[in-house]
Length: 314
Image (tube, rainbow, N blue to C red; front, side, top):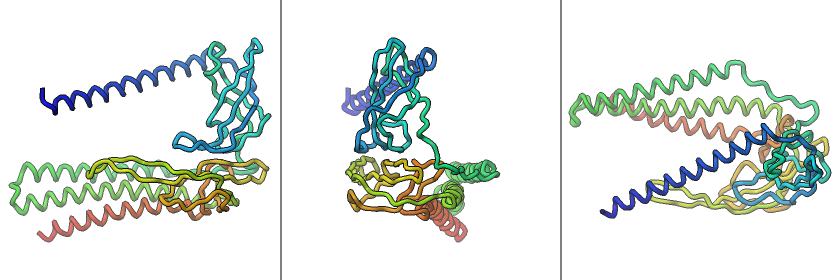
């Protein structure tokens, strides 16, 4: 048996093993959830402890806490949670409702949390009335351009000799249409996102936050040159709401440079209807991501236009 075959079999076996493992874990999680829903008991739980820091790593975004609750027999149970308050800092003694499996008290979830709500009087921005039509139009236009481009590429590959001008023209036109499809999809998504962020910007409130901690994470990826790594520097921000509650959460951005320091004050823009959703840098920062997305779509459009011009000049 050749080395290549051995490597292929080993890789296939490894992927199959991981697939089986994830399937088993998924089935187990679903069975626990169904049992909790069918046989669970509701109880009032009390926040017994709150950890001071945000867990460093991709798995944590808010302060972990410990809930204490009792089963019908009066037995006391403790359970550590890494989420459940949406970024709101829980206080010791707060009460929440939990649903747990009496035969497996570790199988528990928070079902009612009166402390997670918007600022008094806050309303969520209404979605635009024709957004679904716009999304459908963008998807349809991108799909038509993509199919048209693929058909032209197939016609060029099968209907013309590779050294003929017709082959080159059809191939360039087909590739241009594929790039136009990508441009419509990306720029369209960016414009829709920009409209949504503009509405959020109008309803956003601002506060002064404090950076509480920073850390470094390594991101691994693969490209044509092989595996690569890059370092990002996440950080956590804490700020106060008008009703006295505190928000302490991992910031949504991941700077490539280690520019933040604990104790540094930053401007925060948050949605009063959902205070755990915030952006560091003020309301204008909300527009940055969709604007960059639109710009990326325009790059695709520029490439498509260049291919169209070359095809027309043949």
